[in-house]
Length: 460
Image (cartoon, rainbow, N blue to C red; front, side):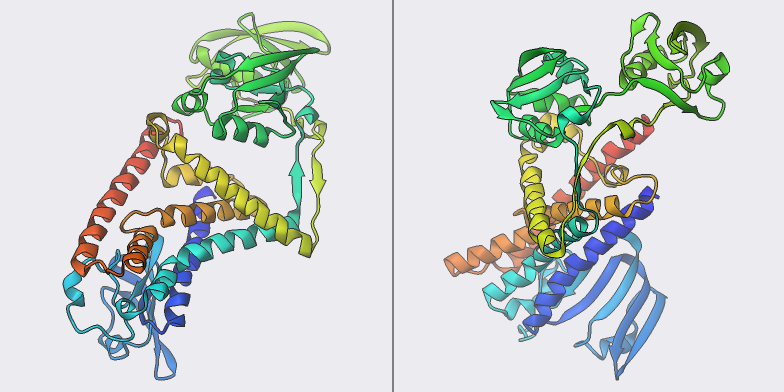
């Protein structure tokens, strides 16, 4: 299900991205030779072209039919077999589909990209980024209209929060409620994460029982947390009351029952589900004693854990105890709200780059596996569209980076031409394109290599 969601999301985003290039190319009467969903090395699943008033198709072909070549003004539409990405091949342009400048040695034609005015070429090349960003704003607005927002005030979590090991290292304790960061009152955990990890908030005040406690975080906190591979700063805290068991659960065989409240592992107190899971995992494959309450009576029993350090029990659902604040939006209200969410998402993502471009951040880079893991294992339209809008923001930002082989590289060279009046030579563009593609392939291999290592080690 995660793979299906990832493929549908990326396919949709590729179509609208390449559609942006196509739209502006045709607007300025530039020929588009090919428009493909997915890449097609060696062969294509489908090739189609409309001429003589009707559509003509070719299935599982290694090259375009000769008849297609007789109608160069018409775009060839296709579906490749490599199910990620796609392309819009624009005539007279050096890009990932055409890195050989010698192919442009013929006399420039009025329907080619290279003969268009600089401002027109700028719009053609940035059309994909524009459509991706505008598409994200439209999706966010639709989400606001269809589902509204559900926000969770910090104090509406009845048992407080559990914090990761890096946070506990610098003074946080499980059960703390965060009150303020650098003097600014906090209302939601997403604001806390943004202030601490992205804005470098240092002076934190928490409510611990009835006391207010001050915590000072170092400048390196965000990098340390990322370097440790910790994905969450904090999560809602719940007692471990057994809600059910998996098949052949070790805990059930040992005598635990639904409704038991687990409170200790080998005499080490565990006040929440996450504490219990963290501590018991240290005894994988060993014998442990688990203390629990049943009918208000404390008791204990022993069991031998499996190699994963789990007892096969899952926690009771406590979501009914959490009071979220729902806000609905009418059609006209949803538009500015969606635009606001889109811009704030972009700003947050840009801020993350100060972490990404660090040793700790680089070690946590991921590829398609990491992206796919963000989707739920069961289908949820709201989450699907939220993730699609987020990925559209990422795709727009990453493509506008001034790197050869990306749209941003072409934008950079076009802006240089507009400012200086000097157009980079085709040979220069060819070399820049090749260098850019090498860099991108190296990054792609590195990121997906990280995913492979995590998958082998069971961390993905």
